[in-house]
Amino acid sequence: MNKKPLVIVATPNICWLNSEVTYPRTADEIITEAVRCREAGASVLHTHAEGQWSEVINGVRNASDIIIQSGMSSIPLQERIELFEQKSDMVSIIANHHAEAFTQVNCDLLHPLAELEEYAVACRQYGVKPEWEIWHPGSIWNLNKLIEKGLLDPPYITTFFLGWPGGTWSPPTVQEYLYRKSLMPENCVITVSIMCKEQMDILVSAIIHGDNVRVGTEDWPYLQNGKIAETHELVKEIADISRSLGRPVATPAQAREMTGIPMMVKK
Image (cartoon, rainbow, N blue to C red; front, side, top):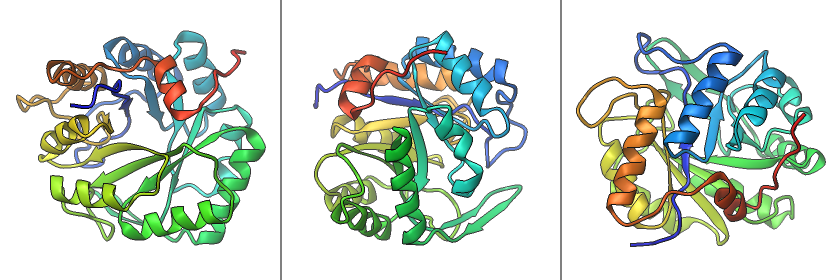
């Protein structure tokens, strides 16, 4: 068992598979849930706050020490400048094209390498750490190309997506997770996100192999007993499992040290 503290990423956002699942929408609701997730064991908040980035980023930062990861990688860079200007700790960037098929909506968008290069430049310019979404081996090819071009600074923050429906689907198996892990360059911090009922088997494998996990209403809103839960409850469940396996849970300060993300100044 790897004893390195586990980074838990909480994603209290829209459930793409079940429109009846509730989630925080207003800035105040997002801030409240961020605090609850931090108390439950999360060290990173993955949030969607289109139209209210300033209020959410500064509100969360004043209420908690949790790391802020700004999501919605489907939105063009030009429409995400606010989250850079507000100094989000991290920004999510898909390392390939979007091809997702959800219950209420499909998402099909091209993201050529030139766009990824623009993101890398913007991250350096604003001092925001990129989090690269890795969906298949082609994503890793793009990541390596950015590294070769000298556009990224280690450690490289990455998230594996398995079992998400659509043209970028990959099998939600431990074998797929380990194969993808074997292809990654050195100096990567890996988090795993699963959107299907096989979630727990793969997350436990990630815990055992020293990687990190993402949980929340966005990915899979169900506890092991089948009950629909709020994100902080899902965080507590995976934190308890990690501790029962002998792996401690990281604080935001420990997560910052592992990812090379400095503490941002509160406004």
